[in-house]
Picture 1 (cartoon, rainbow, N blue to C red):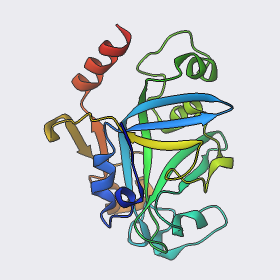
Picture 2: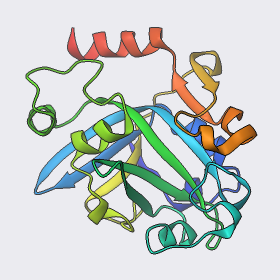
Picture 3: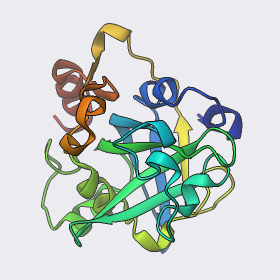
Picture 4: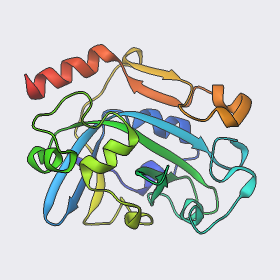
Length: 205
């Protein structure tokens, strides 16, 4: 088990980072409740040149300013006034690349996750969208700007799980039709359904 350091997130290719986060574990420790999940879906956002990115064209606002910070910082924003969406900033300072974590398989702290999700058992829908990921792990917009490198509350672990490339599907991102041609870019990575089913069976059968 190894905590991912700044060198992992500082790299220039956000698409590569996004794909390599599949199989890693996002861990939170809020209120002395440690919870985690295996990352099974991500999306890459390629900064100022990416029409789907909040930083397209060099846009800077109070909300997205953390995207211009150092690698490994959390960018959490509110979608539709309801869903807290969790991203990790990558690349160097002033280059606003980020990876959205879209889905996880819950692993640690299941009772806390179920309580947050108001469920009685883990299913494939427990954390199968970016809003439910944050809800399951207790992540809020108040955590935007929190580092996943040196924080006691949130980090990413490599637990030695590797998937062949054929088990990771690449395709267009979801809900970014406004981005025109950029909406078609294969910047979304998802562990294959068969792999997800196998892992769910390992943990919850």
